[in-house]
Amino acid sequence: MLTSTFVLLLVSIFSLVISRVFPKISVNYVSTLVGILCGLIPFIDHRIEEFHAEIFMLLIIAPLLFFEGFATPFGNLRHKLKQIVGITVIMVLLSTVVAGFALHLAIKISLPLAFVMAAISTPTDATAMSSVSLGLTMPKKASEYLRLESLFNDASGLILLQATALWLVNGQFNYQKTIIDFLVSALGGILIGALCCTLIMLFRQRLLRTLVDSLTVQMLLYILTPYLIYLIAEEFHVSGILAVVVAGIMHNSEARVSLFVDARLSFVTRSATDIMNTILNSAVFVILGIMAVRVTRQYFSLTNVAIWGASGVLLYLVALAVRYVYARQKLKEAKKEAVVFALGGVHGAVTLALVFSLLELGVSGNDFSLILMAEFILIILSMLVPTIVFLFILPKKKSNAEILENVTRIRHEMVEAAIKEVDKMHLPSRAKHVICTYLRDQAKATSLTEFNHRFARALRIPEIQNDFYHNFRYRIFTRCFAVEREYLQKAVEEGRIETAYAAKLYQEVLLAEAMLVDNREEE
Image 1 (cartoon, rainbow, N blue to C red):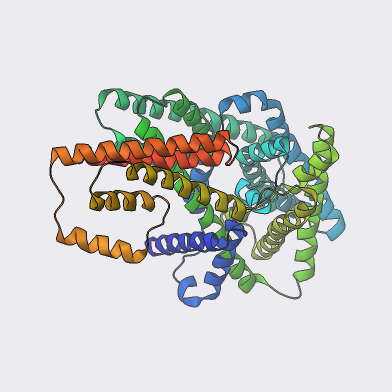
Image 2 (tube, rainbow, N blue to C red):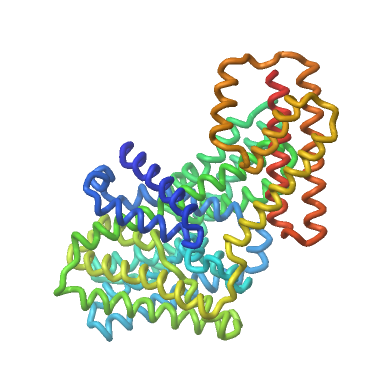
């Protein structure tokens, strides 16, 4: 398990590096392709263990949903509660019923098996959705609905799957028990998530007000929270998925209320969330690529490919139809927005995880291979179709290359403004050169050769331990950083850079100044 985790982590990081080389291609597609290549290389494939749905849900899906919840203000949910219930309960049930009967009548699949396949096809993936809309402007309302849907419909799909799988294995379906189980699991998950999060939140807030420096403890608690809450909820046989989503949403409110109680903790928490979210998202699609190779290698057969293909296509078409009609009738969306909402129901690794959970429910090998291949085709279609269609119906954003070029230019101009300020100072030429070199590092305008010279010099010459020198250096750099911030503000006022991108550069300057303060404290 340790080797497998380490290999997946390395491959996920590698795919992120590759995606930066090809910024026009979504990182999710790059990660999937890298996963496929890993699955085709025996040396790597043999070092990655077999897929276990429970481990996948705990180690990857639980924290991802927690972070998605963390990015969702509670007020957004409170005002859209009716729509959320409709999308994640009513629409899911409609989709399951229609798809189940369609498979049964059109392809002559037994009704219990058809409903199992329909239930698995209901969860959507916000991460996969971002890959099909890269570089395009999504309608705001439809985008919000899609994101909220992906937060909560995993639980609906899982509960429906468990009920229909028991129908398939035991030959009977208990409607009353299914409804009760759904309510208990959903409400229990919400309750456990809220209760556990409240206790953790109060404990963390107490630490903030009693310990002088609790950053390390706070970060460990934050990282472990989704795993802990998921395990507790599952131990009580309620929805661990809903529990971690609720916990994430509550953490969002906590972060907003206590933003300045410990500013460093707030910043580190957001940075850690971004890093973990990026790596876990990449891991999801790497795993999807690896599983694509393994599934094809193990279950592909020309005799069954027709029924697999027909089942997957029918599942996808029924889902599109139900989603479109629901968006038009219940959400009151215009035709274009309804099409976007319908196509935006992209499926990903959660769907695959639900398929593999069937192995623990006693589903036969033949049924399992049919479900697996049909759902895999569904996943591929749900990613490819909107990727193509959205190019024709959605307006394009300014290209990443153009944005990056403009941000890079402004960053260089910002640094040059600070260097001009240094030139005005009465300093020895050697001191000016050193200061300007550090400033140019902000714009990555120093060469590797120059870095090597500076590194060799740092090894030879001890650091100056002199209060006057450090105070003098501090005043110079703080003046330079002030000039950079003034330049950025002027660039925004003149419309040469968008506020959002200027804010990122502004943050870089503040971080550089914060590092300067940290170095002073260490001295």
